[in-house]
Length: 493
Image (cartoon, rainbow, N blue to C red; front, side, top):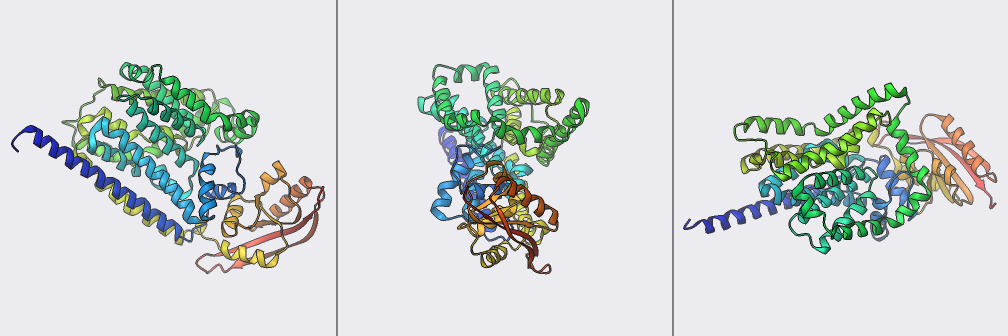
């Protein structure tokens, strides 16, 4: 090299190519996930079944879950039909957006190799790398919005233009309509930016009002619905947070253990890999809490977990699942590199990429094996849907007592009106004519209880026929389903 300028330009070009290759490989990985999922025989589980059913009604609110995921899928299903491919494309686009957001947020903080390391490390987090492909919807969207908001926030530190502030406010508003625990991420972001002077001076100025205004405008439609339906929106969440009531002391003890367990499960195997890397490079890895970005991430985690700990000690949070922490714990790899910036270099990046590549091979293989071999992932819903249409062509609507049954049957026949029994009993939508109630399982008592609840909700309903039949064979690849059914005629009231 003849001068430093030429060498620096060459290094920048090499880093740019490395970043581009990484993002292309990432896009290929999620494209593979789409192909595997769309060709898989696996059935829908709870979250995806709920997402499919929600397409029947475009609303401002959907019970205990915010509406944004359903709003995003509505035009896709409308254009391309209700099918597994569209469902998988939406989810994997959001997952790609999460990795992309982390990469772009990390690049100005820890360089290209550090950004590749941080983004690739997300596959080591089980709720993001594994569980998101199984049955997550709202958590996937909330994490994507959080990653994009973090990217936008990092951009505000250097270029705080009007449009960037407006985009930041929009992303926070959309995040709050993705999943309500996104508020923990917003709290973490606010705490870190206010406590660190360098960030506070860069972000909190008069233009911050633009972000707040856009935030409020984007929240307004769902926010107004939420005010009128607060009990409906929070009832299930409160029940999950408290779990089985065990008194204050019991709730505190269980809350502490569940919180510690959730953090441990979320960060494993990430902490093992990073602990190994830190030990190998311990001579050059120095803690740099004197840097503003390192202190930002420190407060980013301290503030929300102080609030969570307060809820636990108050006995108001006795249950915790790793995915609930997803919107606030996803930046763990980036935070580690910001606190130990000497590790954001090519050698470390290469080591992490080898581990991440191994996970990127094992995860699709494991998902495929589970789809074809797992007892709870296979059921002949396509055959069941065809049988029901043949046996009950006069049925105007189908009501299933299990959400997964309702979602899978609607997926295989979107021409039907399909409902989940608890929602029908609660909201009492307009249903007339012959209605088919089904329970796919071995417990006939549930069919009787569901029938009584339905007849209580629709007083004009008259039971016409009851029975049972079985679809498929237990030795077949997709197993068998035993169905209890009741055909009820509902007159106009």
